[in-house]
Length: 314
Ligand SMILES: Nc1ncnc2c1ncn2[C@@H]1O[C@H](COP(=O)(O)OP(=O)(O)OP(=O)(O)O)[C@@H](O)[C@H]1O
Ligand SMILES: [Mg+2]
Image (cartoon, rainbow, N blue to C red; front, top):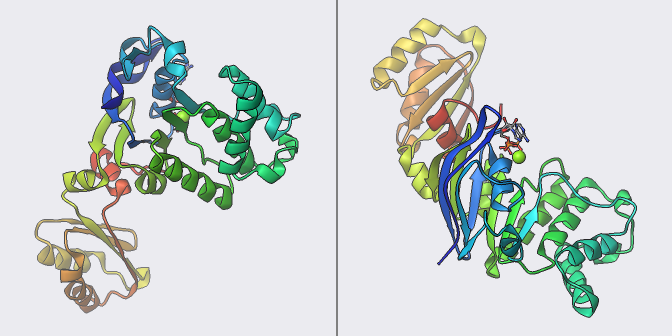
């Protein structure tokens, strides 16, 4: 059963089209990642899905609820961790959670019980009484996540929850998301960190300039670009005769699946281990001194590079 269906979603701000007709489906229990660089349109998509603002056109259904027509009804089942932290600094963690719980119509004993559970999950039971202003950025993010899961949503939507926080909190957040998902919560996770999306998400949508330019499992995405690894060879510049090296490389790689830039050779290859020693020998024979060799398996960065010609993070 699908948890969320988005069809031809489009959003313009004045003449600027921030989201250009995006469609995707998230199944119940799945963890779906939206990966894209700054300004790609991730938050704009999320804000429409959570009913924060209406799309210019398109449709959003959460289970059988029309989110555009009945955002309040959908919000009962959705937990949102917005990109901007929304907390009262002079209130304690518990007071903040209480505030958010009431927004979701929780009260009394069941609210306090829920807060206790959430504090456990986000690992802040010991700090529950402390004012949020004394918290690190990562701890504040964790309170934000806590606020989003108090009402036990079926769908948790997180917009770049690990930006600008310490590694310890980052790990804690990733583990929490993984656990919530394994316990059955459906997750939509946006990020421009490919490692996080690779780690957390079963299926991934790659977003660029307001469009979903590819989607699938990590394996499918890797296969879509021919599953090529990259070999990086760093060479000493003083020893480099570019002309000579290019000529040898062209002899070895007639398909021109290499790039020579500055003091680095990058080769795209399906099975780098098969050619590595011959390749190194060839470069050495031209009198070029190699300072390092690095093989990078196909990952989301290479998929993005392949599809757009740009790096995910510049
Ligand atoms: N309220 C708004 N008014 C005008 N333009 C907007 C508004 N909100 C977003 N945009 C523009 O829409 C585009 C997409 O922005 P959005 O915040 O959705 O990107 P993002 O993928 O979430 O980026 P980031 O990784 O930086 O959070 C950007 O060019 C942004 O300037
Ligand atoms: Mg954003």
